[in-house]
Amino acid sequence: MTIMLEAAAAAKVEEKLYQNRYLVDAGRPHIKVRPHIVPSKALLALTHACPAGCYSQNDQGQVEASVDGCVECGTCRVLTAKTGEIEWNYPRGGFGVLYKFG
Ligand code: SF4
Image (cartoon, rainbow, N blue to C red):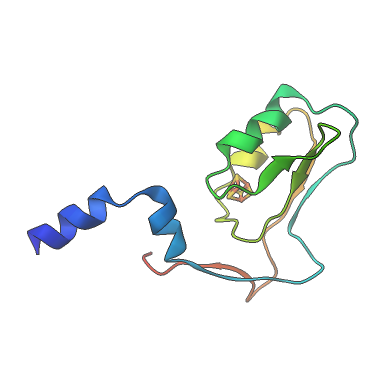
């Protein structure tokens, strides 16, 4: 039992996230980045701060979101609360993350 707990504690975040399942609501992303030319520092920070890696920069330097795999932690909502650069909602019932461990 102790060995199993130690192994679980030593697992990387990516390995833990892989245990989750996600039901995609095709064509209805629950988080959207509002159109922009130059992202604020807060919006740009999401490319590193999102634990599920949902944000990336395109070739023009704008931030894009692909919310498949979002764990609904709310980090992006908090970080951009003042700039209002994202539109954040919970997924519709039955969609989104399905936690395996809690
Ligand atoms: S709620 Fe959390 S996991 Fe989902 S997109 Fe925002 S930062 Fe990423």
